[in-house]
Structure formats: C-alpha cells, structure tokens
Length: 315
Image (tube, rainbow, N blue to C red; front, side, top):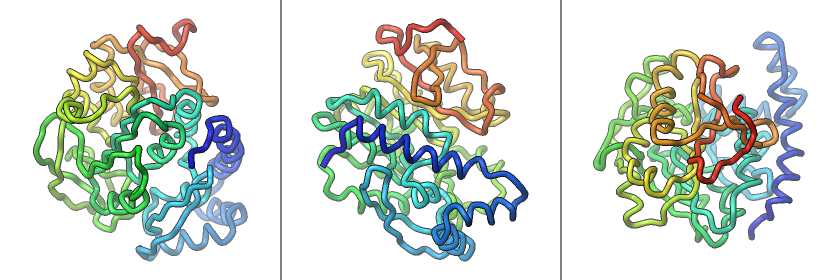
C-alpha cells in the first residue's frame, strides 16, 4: 500500500525533530554517549553492544512512514534507520525534495543504494513508473533482496555501475561494520583507518542498462568517490534523455580529488547545479565549491536548463 506524498511530508517533519536533536548533542566522546542514551534509552544500548562486539544480529526496523525492513545490527550504516526510521541529518534535504517532487510515473535509479532507503521511499510515490536499485555489496544486497522480495515496481541489480561492462574490484571493511563506505576506488581506501577486503563484483554502464530497461527521469548517485566513472558510462543517457541527478558531493581534499571531476563532467555537458535547502527547495548556484561545504558531504541536484528547477538568481 502506497503512502501519499502529503502524509510522507508530515511524517518526515515529525521525524526530523528527533534526528536534529540527536545530531546536535555536544560534549566529549563519553558525554555524547550518555546524553544519547537518555534520548534513545534501550535502543542505544542494544545497538552499541551489537556494534562493539560485531554481533551480526538481524533486526526489524520501522521506516518513518511505517514500512518494516530487516537489517544487520553490526553495521553502523543502519544506526539512524534503527533509531528514527530515517537517514542522517545530511540526507534530510534530499528526502524532502524527493517527497515534494517525485511523480507517480517517474523512473527512479538508486545507484549505490546500500540498504535501499531511497528506493523504499520512492516506491511509495511511484506507482505507474518504476524504481531501479543498484548495490554491489553482496552481503548488503542479500538484505535488500529479502526486504523487497514482493515489490512489483522495483528492479534489483546486485552490481556496480561504472564506465565498463564486466567486473571490478570492490573494497569493503573486513568486519562489515560500515557498509556505507564500500567503493570501487582503490585510492579512496587510503583514507580509511580500518582493515578492508577486496572482491570482484559485476559492473555495467547505464548506457548499456537503458537498452533493456526504462530510461530514468531522476537518479540518486552515491558511490563513494566513483561518481565520475558512473557518469562516463552514461554519456548517451545524459545527452539524449537528460535525467535529473541527485549526487553526493564530498568536502575538502576528498571532494577536490573525487567529487569535483564528477561535477565538472556534468557542468561541461550543460547541466546546472542546485543547492538543496532545509525544506527540500532547490536553488541555482554558479558552481559547486567543495571547500565551502560545511560538513563532510552534501547532496546537490543537477538538471538541464530546459526544465530548470528554480527561477531564483544565482547564489
């Protein structure tokens, strides 16, 4: 049963208050732990123990609109899903944007889906279009497949999206403690302080994928530094069909090394960049300055000017 967009918006606004209260906790490491314990009570204790001891316990969590999914409790990537049925504070603007702007007949591509939160959200609104999920981490994908076993408008793909069809090296943590950091970029792993393992995963280009599947109207792109590779494998898609792209952009040196080439690739092909505000509104910007991003990352929208998202002046 689908949830109407106005209901989703009402529920995310209520959830947002709890997410912001959690993220605003200040103090030393242990002070934050105790203050969050008072906020979340038993949930915080259970998750802390499972993560600390790396216990692969399967747990059912409830997403903010009421849908239930199963996730592993030794993965830090699911903490906000467990606590709030939502993603972190940094994702709230994009969540609101999608709720406000997705249409029933959209075709949504969730590239670098992790446990598929954005796909779960999008299929609540998209009823006559379709959602396509891409996730190369086999362990994570096993949960995705279980949670979406009987969801008709969703197509699941256990593969990486890149600039070649075949196989790629995929790097992930040895203890599976942070699935959100999995990447196909070897140089990204140099910034990790944890042990990781390398496996081979299937890969395909979007230009190949769209020959047998509906063309996306909107894509969410979050592939831990490999965004430029995804875009290079989607030249025909970008030039011919011009989908809207929501892309994660890193700050600092990581942003300069990995995000800026992807941003430049889109701008050179006539895309315009938009900053998302706290209400999910899109504001046209002249460029994306990774050095000015206040936190470690931020989602930006990119769209061709023929269907411009905003008529506001450049920031």
